[in-house]
Image (cartoon, rainbow, N blue to C red; front, side, top):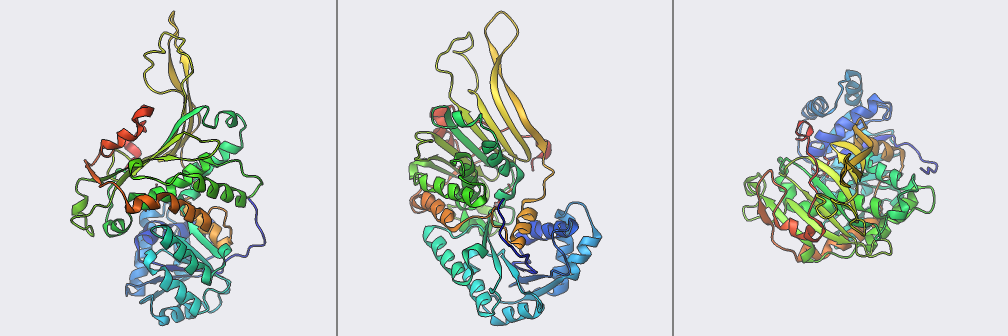
Length: 472
Ligand code: BG6
């Protein structure tokens, strides 16, 4: 939306260049950006930094493999340009020599962007190193989630980042905000007027959001031990979805207005209590590499949330996410209330749910409105049908491609503001300290049966449809 006079970054420094995120998402995104003209490599160089002392040729080989495996359509020209502009700096992040080497690799850069795809525990060291080497001047920094591990550490992280960079140069990335289907929630809500009269406690019974993954922690056991599902995807990805669904209309045309409204939603969320939460752990998690044998870390989390605002008073928001579940799917169901009177033959036995609006986020994108229609015959009985407003396999740019392009251009619209991060932590903070134990659940299920208890009074969870062909 709004842009001020933003200047394009002239170099990218990627901390964590030998990590999982760089391999699966970032190098493929850079490759795609070169292919479509968003990154002018090798003129805009990429410097990879990692603490592991890899040789440059090993890192280059890894980039080739990463792009081959995750980069979509092969384009040797784009890959060649990525490699031509690539330099590698290896060493300990606490060593000033690493930062001198980065400087030397970038003799002409005036406005670099630094991407911290590293464990949050390293942020302070790296940001201090950048500051001391003069690499923070006119620079931007992209910080990967989770931003802190609770409210206190998020505040500390923000303090550290803001000591070296102004807020407008700090890009807190949540890749869910770069997904088409999620941007469409914002668009759909405010580009139409028919929703507004029903979009409140009078017509909406509850909202359910599911982020389910069929796979387990996949080699990220050590990371998961420090995070757990609540920190990994709920406090950020799912909360962002809640914010887009729940926010008041932005008051001007600009993303600053959207960010204001996001922060307002988080501030209105009632802090969670232990009874609002069911934690689960899949059978076999304790045998994963990097996992403590007595670990109580949750790989599944379901919760009931309230937004104490005029619009949402009394409406429960049910969120659940987990690994090793029945399928890989992300979906929102906005469940409307039933009609006040049961006038028809099938009213009493009406199987299934009242009308609803469904936003499918992945693996395919859909917006469907479900309403009942009469079936032909003498009886006044019918069935619920879905009217699809959108139903497509996503052909979108990867969220990382979109967000990296924006960050290099200095556009902060799709990034998270400090006040929103802190307000979101304030909601989950109470249950980080005081929480029920993680209950076991079998792989391939929908989590521990106790999660159903949360939703009992509202007809249970709606199970998203799983298309076996496209779920991992
Ligand atoms: C990441 C989490 O942020 O999001 C992962 O760390 C999770 O655990 C992933 O699998 C889900 O993202 P997507 O885009 O695959 O739905």
